[in-house]
Length: 97
Figure 1 (cartoon, rainbow, N blue to C red):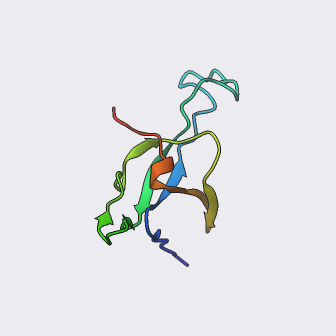
Figure 2 (tube, rainbow, N blue to C red):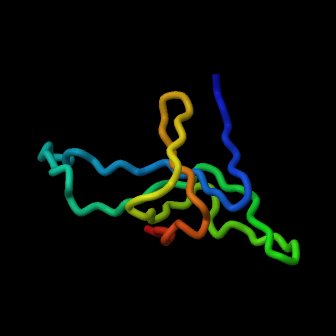
């Protein structure tokens, strides 16, 4: 059964990018190697409203790679996959190649 989660307000659904456990040549990497805590944006909410009722759009879009805080987010499990739900202001930066 396929499910589609659409965040409300200024929430962002992120799938964490797991660092590889070994290199292409087969060298095993330590678990605590210096990798960025990053993820890929899967879905975004429409945005929040200010006191005057104006819509404040979310600053990221689906498909963006983002830098995540070390702690925080709400874990969501859909099928076999695990995702994290963050507020827009909790996302630290977008990552570009």
